[in-house]
Length: 80
Image 1 (cartoon, rainbow, N blue to C red):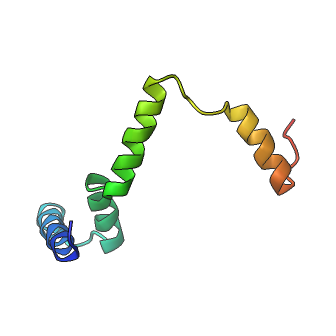
Image 2 (image 1 turned 180 degrees about the vertical axis):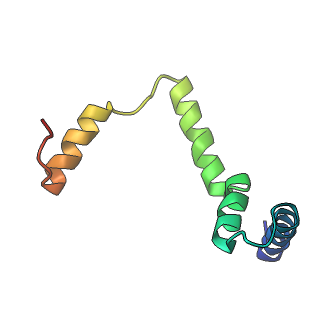
């Protein structure tokens, strides 16, 4: 979506939310809520690709393997 359309979309959303909930809503919270409802196209493509991988049996590596490598790489001792 072109930038001007994104601005208009956010503006309409923010005005409606402020009208609904009052003017005490922080703009950062409004933006986070709007962004959750309007994820970037790249995010959607990545999610769809991951879902296709999962349907084909590719579920990634087990968390324990990842966690061990992460701790090792970052010098974090294993918890008891």
